[in-house]
Length: 119
Image 1: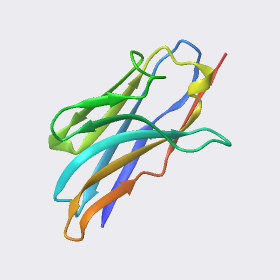
Image 2: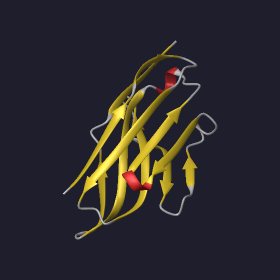
Image 3: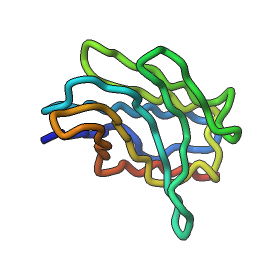
Image 4: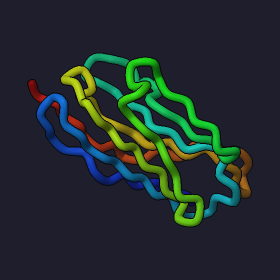
């Protein structure tokens, strides 16, 4: 069993910053990628940023230059630093960990953490 837990989030005025962290534990032998998604009310879940085991990172266009994803491989933890936040960044942010366990390739999701940006 794999457990993924996010922390951080909260409310901030537009232009401010927040940081998120996500740790995974359990029966995951090799992590392939760790990513952040978000889902705003009435909208579909969308990819925000991803970092792979090879060290590459990719960002959605709407956060490029404002958000930074990073990871600590020793701690199986991924972070998301969010700067210059906008009201449209308001959403529930989810962490996704993709990796291999004894059952093959798996996806583990966190429970989500609310980020609210007010103008």
